Image (cartoon, rainbow, N blue to C red; front, side, top):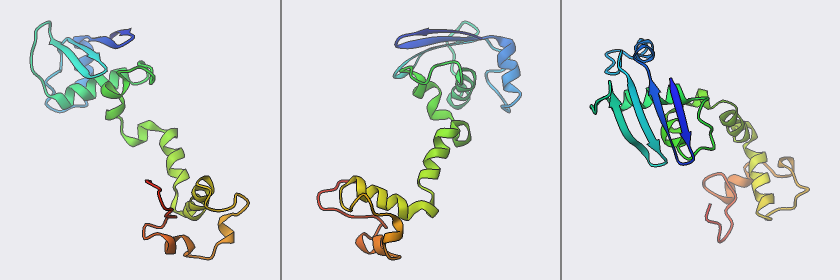
Length: 154
């Protein structure tokens, strides 16, 4: 694999041997044993060549192959990261960031999260905690289980 990164895009070359090895995980692969060249910009795929010629191939397979090869090699801050890699990652691959989000909104912590949210909106005093409110207090304020404040768009 060869990767050339530009400020607004990248070029990726994957050898026939690499696509052959990769295709062992993809039944009926159209990319197997073919040289692959792709060029991306922040809008997505700009150019595609299989064995040096313009050809069509399965877009899902192409996206999966490109994302697999670029994962860990293309910086997350690059403008093409999301269109080439990020949107194809499964939750387990996103790792710690997803875990932190899930932990933050764990149902067991929901009441404290609501208190924290209300404090951030200056709806309650910052020295209050979830223990200072009776069970169901926040549910009574909003049918969605959250604090509803006038003029709040969230």
